[in-house]
Image (cartoon, rainbow, N blue to C red):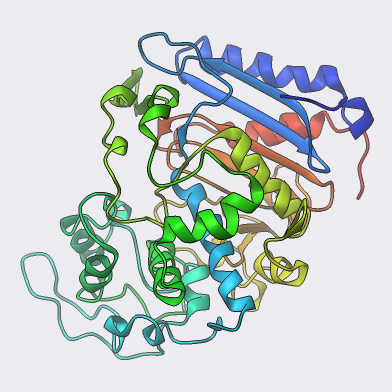
Length: 410
């Protein structure tokens, strides 16, 4: 990978090297993580790249072009795809979701029952809008939240793990039989909302989600290794995935040589189904930091991206005031939520180095990215450990990266 001089881009190169030493000593040497890649860029130019560990549990060396499960880092891509359709006036953010998904007509909030009992008739309320899907204020949930009878119904229907078990139409039909957790627009809860958004992209465009991505995002950006399915010729590049075990080495949970990811996906999960590479996701981040532009064109307009990265929580609230999630890929204090991204609204309250307006997301296998539009810095971090809440590595990376910055645009 061709790197610019860190000093020419406002970084201290020796301080950037601290990141490599820290990751090696704290995570690889201790056995906490098996696989790692990191890329830091500024102004769209890579300035620091590092990888360590192994690609496979059998000791196969890590490689620069490794294929990795990016899980919920799929969500920003789906959100960009939907906003392309908004730009074409094929749909509007305040349209009711039932306009595209008639199965959701009359879907109401939980009013009792569940478990061994049928759900009680739901409470009528305001209709779910597309903006509610994009901000995770839709009333939908994830089964792994494990708090309510609604969550339990998601687990029973296997709505969190739908790659090869269901089609898009079956997915929506199943969701339509389960009450919402709350009236749309009233609370924030990390959920399958972006999976639903992906189905909407399919119905509006008339294309499978993967095909839409390929034609309208991946091909223009040169993201040749990103998709819902893996070319069998590339299987040797797929990394193994691991599960955290307290006090024990991580357990191999998806062996690449035998992975179910090699089966064709019947459901293209807009919330978590993509496989990608560090270089491909860096291209996506470069487009973002360039306000939607890429060499030769525009994925979304600058004002569209401004709208997406503004805080849409009511009254300018942050997630400490609105979230009822047991888990999400966002931190809470000083963090709002836009249309597909968590957004830093008050850097001081995050207790981390940050810029106001910085936006980010992550994936269940501990992958992460952030885009700082003030400093024009992007970072992509890849590993394969579930769940992402295991270690504070995202905070540590941000601290190390910003401590290496010598020239600030703020």
